[in-house]
Amino acid sequence: MKDPLGRLVAHDLRGSMPPSAEGVALVLHGGGAKGYGPMPWSAGPVLRMKPFATAIERAAGDRLAVVRLKNRYHGWNGEEQTPLVDARWALDQIRARYAGLPIALIGHSMGGRVATHLAGEPGVTTIVGLAPWVVEGDLRWGRPGLNVLLMHGVKDRTTDPQHTERLAEELRAQGADVTWRPIEGEIHGMLRHARMWHRDVADFVVASLLRPELTQ
Image (cartoon, rainbow, N blue to C red; front, side):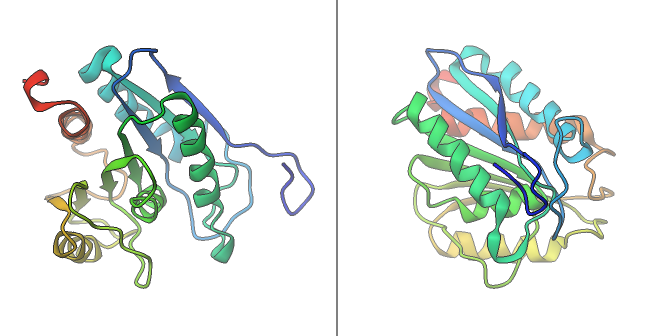
């Protein structure tokens, strides 16, 4: 696929895909409002999500497939919503390999916005938004049976934790099971309490995707 400047660009998936998986965690990285610059695997927003994938893999073993998506571009890019296109492609790949299994979407910043947009996709049962980019007017897909974890640093000045709290209220009002966690002293990069972020997300995803009696 080519970008607006005629350069070849590609989305890509990496991760663990055990044949006996009972569920799938799809990890979505952040970005910016605009930008058609290519997004390499070495980019900061992409690398930031690798420890989350690793933590989920360690907690779940071979019972979950855990894959990270690398978007084609840096930005959301207005009505083109390029990361949504990429994430839908990733979901198609996942469903083709793991038909019928429950899927968790774990996204930071722009990736959190993508996750909430795709909460109504077939198979998606779990949403984790980490310092998500919440925009008024975006579709909300809260419903009974949807498990949601929203975490946001209270000192974040890149995305607004108050917007995330209101998102939690909206999704809960629509019937979703929502956990809202403001993180004291934390900013957008999730680095001041990194181990806590990684551990709590992994615990939530494993408990949500796997039968409770087998995760205790």
